[in-house]
Amino acid sequence: MLGQLPILSAITFLPALGAIAILLLRVLMRNEDQALADKNAKGVALFVTLAVFVMSIIMLMDFDADQAGFQFVESLPWLPALGISYKMGVDGISVLFVVLTAFLLPICILSSWKLEKRVADYMAAFLLLETLVIGVFCALDMFLFYIFFEGSLIPMFLIIGVWGGQNRIYAAFKFFLYTFLGSVLMLAAMIVMFAQVGTTDIEVLLTHPFARDLQTWLWLAFFASFAVKMPMWPVHTWLPDAHVQAPTAGSVILAGILLKLGGYGFLRFSIPMFPNASEFFAPMVFILSIIAIVVTSLIAFRQTDIKKLIAYSSVAHMGFVTLGIFTMTELGVQGAIFQMLSHGVISAALFLCIGVIYDRFHTREISFYGGLVHKMPVFAAVFGLFAMANVGLPGTSGFIGEIMTMTGAFQVDPRVAAGAALGVIFSAVYMLVAYKKVVFGVITNPKLETATDLNFREWLNLGVLAVLAVYFGFFSTPITDTTRASVDQLIQQYQSAQTVEAPAADAAPAETAAY
Image (cartoon, rainbow, N blue to C red):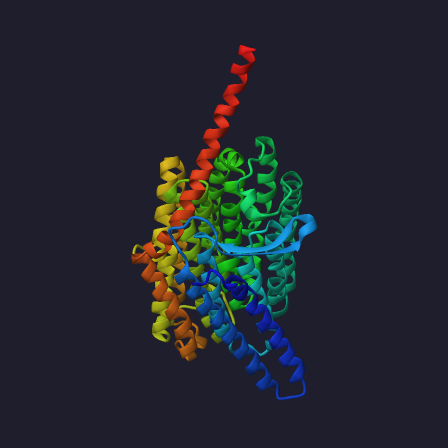
């Protein structure tokens, strides 16, 4: 139905048009009532993000899950002299990330409804960020991908640096420099690939057999960018700082979407384009993933700032993602994708929960709280649900992702799966201890006596996320069925590259001997 319509371009660029409309309204209403101008900016942002979400659902309903290739493809010449085109498309791996992005943005707008500082600029920044992130998942041209990938840094840098906490400038620059420096190497690798193949078309590059030695260097260059973006240990230190200083909605989109760009990059570039290098470096990735899962869980246990605790938790959960991806088993890769989507929901909800109490008491120190269940019982129940989901309680989406990745890892190396399981135990310790300190016990701080429970807006945001976390804990097939064909194709491509390479290496001595 949508095959002939530019649905992806509409979904991608409608938020950017919304951002322009908000900024124009701000200019036109400069001398008008500021409260009315801010209200209009919020209204436009909410309307645009909801419209994009509806369009993404329509696209998903028309998506053929049995087809492994790219769908809704749009292609226009852009820089024909350089072989660069505007090409968009989605497959089973990327389509769900587009929907997740479109889903979380209205929640970000609603969670920022009480914002009073430079409201129009704030809403425009989020809409621009939505355009750039969706563009990453839809781009089928390598340099178009890079523009969207790097461009997403700018609005996030502004969101942290302008609307963040006390040390926001330090955190914003650390976030920008870490992620930008890693991506410079990726750009260099892209130039090398273009020089060799003569095109930037991702579909063509996916079928091009790069030499084994070249694969090694290209893989490392892409790894430098994607590892920082995840982030993987030991280049993870920017994330806790960014989360602590970012406003609530900034943390939601950072944990829910931006961390997934690295995992998506591994699935789109590293594995299919450099299969031999991926096989060679897989043990290194396993080691780094286990270290991330175990070490950052131990670090999280020692945190006094609850937002920083959730940030370190995100690093640990991304360790499961990289672990699952590089098992290159169906269960492992499916589990990694499921874990990314599940973490997008659960981590977003946890940061919203932290935002609820921060809005009331303006502190994130765990020691400040205690006994909130007596004043905020609904909040305590919702926060408890997401804490359990983060731990991986059966019946929540967190369990499905973790058990699939660990099963995939067990098929490759039981020792790797054991290391990941150790991280699960540690995550239960730090998460439940933090929950106990914040929610249970008696109220010892008199400032908590004035606490009020969730309002309607907070109810709406957290309620929707709670439904999804529980639903996908029991019904995982809507996700796995959508991704299965593309994942199977990815694994077959990876395996065929290994089998083709081996005979070629063995054939040379035989020929020499015959000669």
